[in-house]
Amino acid sequence: MIIVQEAPFDAGAALNRFCKGAAGAGAVVSFIGKVRDLTAERAVTGLILEHYPGFTEKALGGIETEASRRWTLIDALIIHRHGKLKPEENIVFVAAAAAHRRDAFEAATFLMDYLKTDAPFWKKETGPDGTRWIEPAQDDKNARASWTGEKRKERP
Amino acid sequence: MARLLFFGRLRELAGQAKRPLALPDGVDTLAALIAWMKTQDPVLGAAIDERTVRYCINQEICGPETPVKANDEIAFMPPLSGG
Image 1 (tube, rainbow over the protein chains, first blue to last red):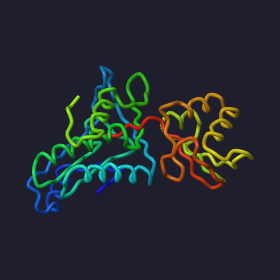
Image 2: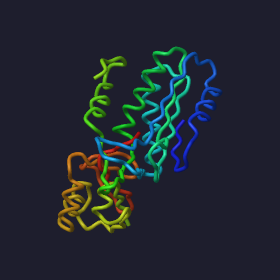
Image 3: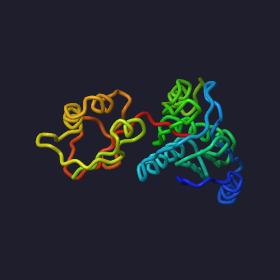
Image 4: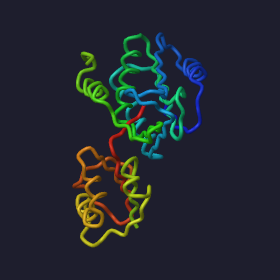
């Protein structure tokens, strides 16, 4: 399931709902991405997330479909905010449910690695010195690249 | 009328998120559109032609060789940064 919304979300409530819906799961792995107040030593006072309505949801659905193709999942969930966010706020929630933990852990990691480079959002950080557009870091690109091909791979 | 959509730093360069455009005669591919845009606005034109920019036509990712038609929605997307 894909949810793209401007409003804040309660990660605990989302996880509870997800678990209730994931019948038969022996393993549920979840992740919360939050707005940091510091990026590379620069203070961050806010984040503005643009998205492409319609296309963003479709692209996230494609990432989720790919995860389901690679691992045997009972369910998966991505909640991603857009709009104006402040430090400490939740940006993204990812959850994967499977019969066993390896599929759940790997699928959740895969979803996040793909989201960092392939999710149609554009982030602008605001700070005391002004604003700047954020692009994926080399670590993000390396993590994404490590998933091509094999189901299992060496972590970068 | 075609609709050009700009995101992120490209939106700032274009000065607008959406731009209606009657495709000029002879502009029948995305590459031709980009080349034409370079003649109209060299700074924006260079930016949309950067290697890291991705393109969508009617919400499908596509390459520069893809045909463009009169009522298409054409999106210019700088590097994606989700999560």
